[in-house]
Image 1 (cartoon, rainbow, N blue to C red):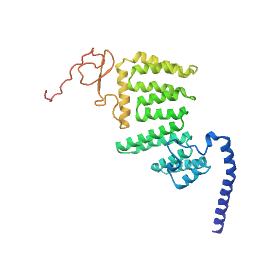
Image 2: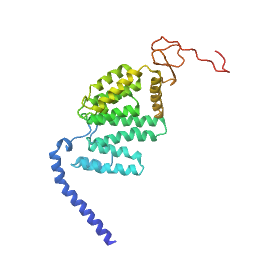
Image 3: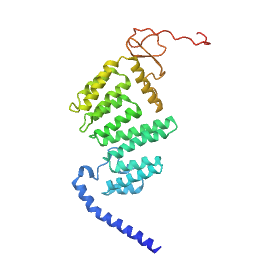
Image 4: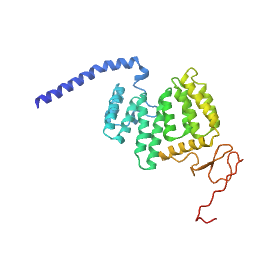
Length: 306
């Protein structure tokens, strides 16, 4: 028993000694990198009084160890994840990003956990919608806090594209990310993918041309963009390709309990053989070119005629 107490005492003294040694080191690092370790920086949407989390977090925020406290809480996130306590993670992540607002991975995991994990775990549609909205709000805060980060802006664009299926917003934020320093070729290509899902061919041609003008020295990027331009020149009026795009988008939205974007009242359609555009089933003629008359639907046997 005495030996155990003696061991604990040694560990406590060692920890205290390490803390005292770190004080001058931390101050030296802070003075040399003020853009990263400025103790006064914080999320512009919050303040010290708004930091969510236990009292030690608030105390740490008042001192010069904000990044150290953020690192310790980040380790706590990993512990909660392994323990399956998913619904306790958001409050800890909120403290992490408040203490270290320029910790991009913390913001990314925070938004992803809300918009993907908690959204998928929810049984009710209203709960799924809530967690998705919360995740998007977190990523908007991250972009506002890190306005020069193409990576963070693209994270928001990807969540709009892949999770919320809000293609206009996805295209908007992809464009913003692509115009920032440090943008990557894959960011550029996602913009016209959004218009493919919408089957908005006017904006699709513009986005393809814009993407071709980016990263002209990147051989792989240019090859992929030219391939996609060639594909759509051959298939933009192909009824089978239109059907494939509609089925893909509506199926993805159904899996996420989102309303259909294409033909929201009726996900079934006819495809005009002349102009190649889809028309809601039951329409007497093509709603786009008006040059094709659809045959009236046959009345099923046993059904009485109106």
